[in-house]
Image 1 (spheres, rainbow, N blue to C red):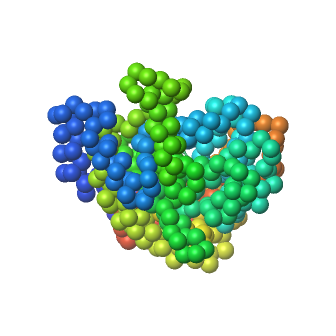
Image 2: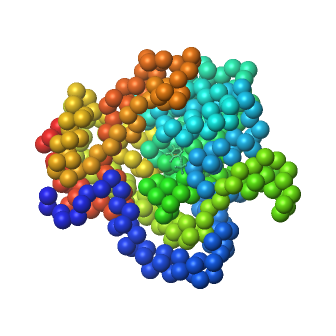
Image 3: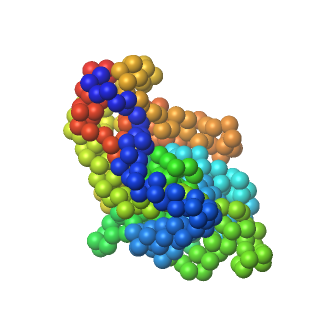
Length: 377
Ligand SMILES: *Cc1c(COP(=O)(O)O)cnc(C)c1O
């Protein structure tokens, strides 16, 4: 290896070094004031994120999974209601649907963009369908204009899972742009450390432009409380720690810069792998910018396990997001789906490989990764 630095999927330490002074001082201040819960830094972050996203309400919470659960609780979804989501996603999306006794109706994705297949959404709508949960997977938006049209036609809520795409811009046909997560009824995001806007532990947020709904979301996240010790609805305890807000305040200011760094790395990979018969590089969606939470290749005719081992020997990590489709997980077994139900998802799970993607990748590292990858494939 040419570089002495260990290559990682995500370099959180390198990113931290550049904001260390600000983060350390901010954390010390929280400790000094002991405002660990709902300190002023949480309010500051909420306001900054509302401004950045151009959305009326941001409700910070404890993690992205809670954000999704609170969203579904606030929409009064009831056991037996059907919620349509993508079969190719992280488990959290389907998990909360199941936890609330709702019925997850999985549908396949598009093979190019990995986003939820809108024709399949329409085919699966029944009288019990209440909501669609598009997942902006790997950092770009699902086709929200079309999804919103389907939702409007069938009177459905749309909960955007924007855990992987914070900061991505969606462009409507008329040229209007909106941030991912601010288009549907509610947007849900995660500040898990490795996410594009990551804190130093767990964190999440819920967005909406609907002020009544915002009240309800806030209430549910705080034990269903309207006024202290007055509980109007069943709620949960889901807060963003003040210490985490310090980190998020520092990183939010740099989020666009971070997205640019990720795009630069993605462009480098794209160029190196262009027109290779065994490699399909990520396809950019037409109406969305990409914030490259992951840089995910589709491999053709490659022994992925052997390739990963060979890469690991050369100090290059590579991950499979996601190895097993949701409908083939034991916890999500259902009469509705079986092996073969979602051919695109099943093929993707068998062929995808994600390469190191973060804000600290320099050209030396990228050329080492791409050169080695091309030698080993
Ligand atoms: C990370 C993630 C979540 C869950 O977020 P947590 O903060 O880990 O609970 C939900 N959906 C998707 C698509 C994710 O990537």
